[in-house]
Image (cartoon, rainbow, N blue to C red; front, side, top):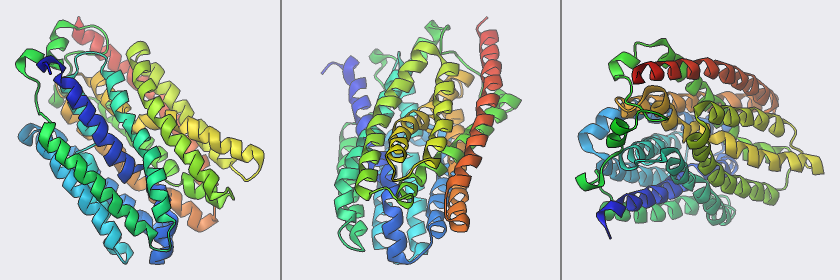
Length: 415
């Protein structure tokens, strides 16, 4: 194999890593809500502490991502992340109360921080010269593929008795062990000099989506940096809270579990395609169009969920949710590296990406208990869905001004 082609080995490893880490450790989490709460005898709000700790951990770890990857390199962080993920699944399988189960959330948050969105953003930014949005979308689309496979693999195990979910977690451990071996054998931190780097292209190509960027010390002095961070936080707050309870909500609404499983499989497959499409749209039409499309879909998702029911039309709304949410969820994955690169450039890419992922996951941490509180108090998620829809509309409006300001700064820097 020619050295100039090794980037595709890195892209393939990244795809596999996202497919099996995010696809098996995060995507199917809704499948575990009912069996785990019943087995442990706890409320959904109590179980959501696990999600909060996961996201708080991820927020803290990602805050230091730029420093850590500079000091240790991507490979060591990925391998450490995989060990943490395997430990999280073991803790989940062995826990007999909600407090031990929550420890798994801490391990999961650390593990996913070093194996998914932030890491992939850094890897693609370093290894790929052109069409970064499309390639990043393709790699992160692996989550949808992995999620669809995970549902089919894990659901039969979960359905086998009260503690069937224990075997499901152990299956995930075995899968992650295979990923660990492949990364250890074939992953490389840096391209060879003859292969070039993404940074080299920036020097030659000052126009378009890539630009040299703003120094980190200057970026953190700019109000629009904090405005962008707040919008990213709220986006994570909304999307994770809504998506995290979608399966449970559909079952509560009276849909047959088999139909819900089918809807969720369609959602996961559509997510794979739409993440790739999001990257393609960005490369062709730019940040504003991409953000608007994804964000409008996010608002429509909540309207669809409020209308889910066992009636024929209610089932149609469930299927529409599966499609629309797949185009909204890239806002919390592929769009984060895009925001970092498009609004702030290459100089401080890893540091700003880490912060954006950090505030996004901080939103996850608050979103999960927020939405579950509506269920515990009202017996329904619908009021929560209405509230999050209003928040998302506010984010769409604010992002128009933020993107305009960012592009003005970029244009000034390129003169």
